[in-house]
Amino acid sequence: MAALPLATAELCDANAHLIMNGELRALQPVFQVYGRRQVFAGPIVTLKVYEDNVLVREFLEEKGQGRVLVVDGGGSLRCAILGGNPVQQAQNNGWAGIVVNGCIRDVDEINGCDIGVRALNSHPMKANKKGIGEKHVPVTIAGTRICDGEWLYADTDGILISRTELTV
Image (cartoon, rainbow, N blue to C red; front, side, top):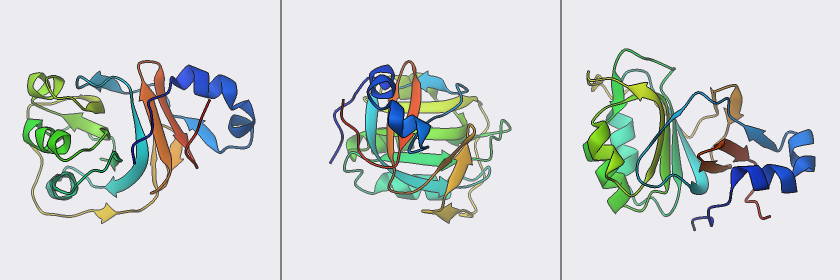
C-alpha cells in the first residue's frame, strides 16, 4: 500500500527524535528530479548493479504496489541504467518511484511519466545486459545505508529514509 505523500520538511520537524536515534535519515542532496510525480513515498525494494540494467527492468516488470525501487548503480556516470521504456512500464505497473545512484536516459520521455524518478544525471549511452547484480540487499547511497522494506519519502526538498512508515 502506498503511503500518502508527506512533505519531507514536515516529516523532519515532526520526527526529530527519529533523526536523533538514526531511524530517520536524509540522503545527501545529489539527485536530479525527473518524472511528473515530484512527491512520492512508499516501501523500498533494493537492487545493486553496475552499468547493467537487466535486473532493473525485471523488477519494474513486476507489480509495484506503491513501492519505490532504490537502485545502487555504484554512482557510475559512464552509462544510463534506466531509460524511458522501463519507466513507462513502472508507471503502468503501479510503482511510486525509482531512485537511481547512477544515470538515466530518455529524459523527455521519463518527464512525461506519472512517476517519481531521482538520478545523479542523464547519459545517452545504454547499459550492459548481462543480468549481474544483487536483489534485496542493503545498499549505501548518498551517505546513507538503505535496507529492503524501509520507507522512502521524496519531494523537491530531498529524500528521507525511515525504518518505518511515518505520519505527521
